[in-house]
Image 1 (cartoon, rainbow, N blue to C red):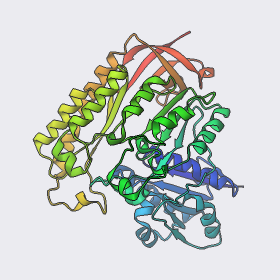
Image 2: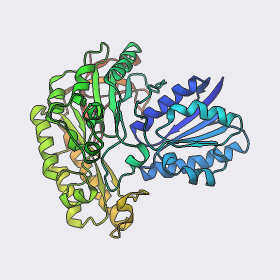
Image 3: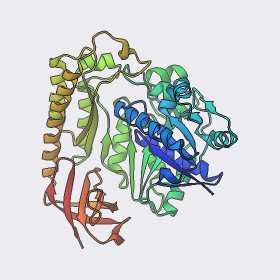
Image 4: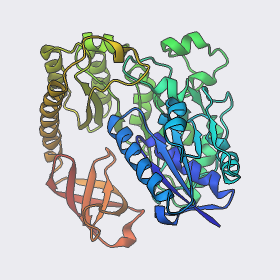
Length: 451
């Protein structure tokens, strides 16, 4: 038996990919370890979308290279940075044994076997296979699970490198997804999150009348044979699964059908994470986001009309090339007006091979950072006010495990994905409990179990 240490950077999609990597390596007798010192194989599953994750990866790779001088082990680099910088990685990090991309994870056991024989491996595939392979998986969680349903993205946002490192959209077949979820239910998982770079576009590419022209420019069939809404209905009655979520959607594909499905089905959680990126129409056009602020607002209004207590969270980028003070303040205004439950934010950072990276009107870092600080302060205030409205209410919580900040306490999430910490017996892990909210913070709640 050999051991593999894997470190994952970036989004939930990367975390799900890492679980599949562990499943594939298990087939050639590599077992997971949480200690790099015990590893025969060290894997980095990388992100090139987020600058902070990218910097951390290169730092950790350097540390692994130094450790390798004293103890021989294999080093592999996969994920988005590998897909984007394969030649540079092989040239500048001679101690790296394997470089593989996002679209050929299924070949990882073959690459490791070659590396074990002393061969340096660098294999990148630019597009996903037409038929997505079903991969083994070793879950790193006990109560909730990620389930990939669609890979890649067909939009061409001018700041984003996802299409070039993840390929164009490919959906898994509904029956394969349901089979995976049935297995998860049999293993005791209570909640599943359907994943995709653009999960709300699920299924359109499975239709017989699908075409590349429709894919590239964004298309919603009038009466789709397959859709995320239909998938949620198809898997809804799997025994044992209590909650269904999905991440991450594009506003273009949040249809009335999807909103009505979430409102109707009891297992579908009233939680929508739909990145907006900017509250200004000019900036949105330069980003190639294919919607306006007003269109996004109408979508949010539809959600709240059907589900008044639904949570809507978003992502925003500040300091996009050419963004004026007035345009930035339009983002601040939309955050207040739409009363988001929470938002992820980032200062714009140029990504290689994207149009916006070479535009002349780049914003100075000090301006970007000041805007980011101000927007975050507004978001914190809005989120805290939303959480205060939950004081003294009773919330249904799925208990996920020990609190990260205090292992003597438990934590779980509301149906609307708010983190709640509370005292309780560890036997409650994996069960649904009612918790009365006693304290509200910007990003979490504290409460007590109602027995």
